Image 1: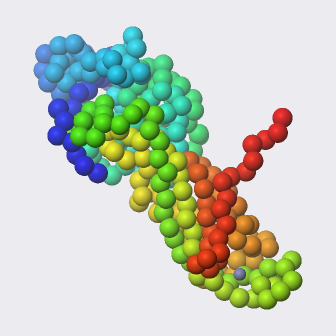
Image 2: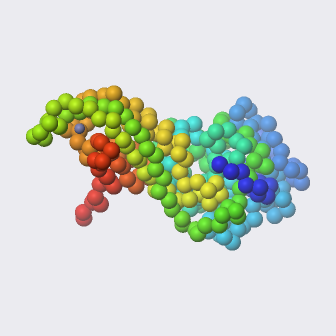
Image 3: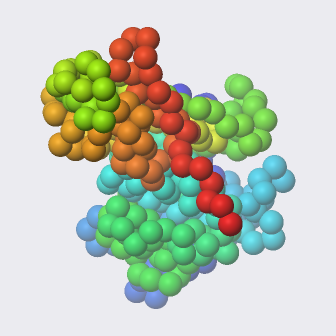
Length: 293
Ligand SMILES: [Zn+2]
């Protein structure tokens, strides 16, 4: 990921966050100040009002999220890379924007949204442990809960971002397909087939997983190759490699293997799964048909 030579990070802290948890208002007129909270929950906050601070977020006319309500930046950390696609999807549906936090720990992100959109995002998050810290950080930003432990300790200057990548302007709504290839060696037989594939045999299977994701115009990325590699390796390749697939997938034709893979990855923004039995023989699965009403 390239770090753009953007302006210094611009940050606004929600009103609730300008009050420390001992009920003392942060001192106005000083730059970002470490509130010195307990343990890992410490964070830095800006203390000027949004309009008199060089670090304030000024409403951006290009930014549909900002409307009349002042936007809020929420730092979050994901300890599971598998949660990122879900968070991205929920953020997109809620009208929130998700940025990688440059210079922060791995898995650090910044959510930018107006409070109403943040509430929508909170309501969309599944009640799974991987997203619990995100939910707590949002509730803290909204003033509904005390600061949770584990908030990223990021100085506001690390929130370097711009609305678009000036180096390569792209149209809003640009979406890309992102693919990763894998191979695994495995045995199978096709009990319903009449012919030599009815007997036990093996292949070096090739698998291609393709996701479809909107371009993050700041980072220039739509989906992290490494996150895709890790997820597919853990959930699919590690299970099928050097296995007798019939013990995992019933009647494991390439078609059934592709459908099984899709179901294992159904929380990703999948576009397509391809499975090769040989270099010239492969199937493509693009997901279940839409339900008929
Ligand atoms: Zn075969």
